[in-house]
Length: 130
Image (cartoon, rainbow, N blue to C red):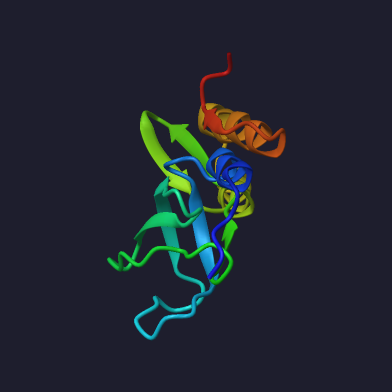
């Protein structure tokens, strides 16, 4: 197996900093988590492999050039002081759109504020109108 250049490792570290959420597409290991499993990158080693903490408890790393993951479009919402991290911006937007439809008054305004921030691409979307 050939190891990636220092430049590739550097770019991989920039693309997948610690805390990045990913979804498994392919892993060439008998003990691999199921395809579709989500996980959190904890770091990148000198071979370009992603050090992982999979949501199902598995600790297998994503080997550079062998395994495949996709980066998730994560977003954080803060509503009524409750913070939630979503692995899908679309899922969060759909949730708050339904909340808008089922509410009125100040509650509806709070959900609308979060929804507007979600669709504008903000990474942290709170019900604070500022």
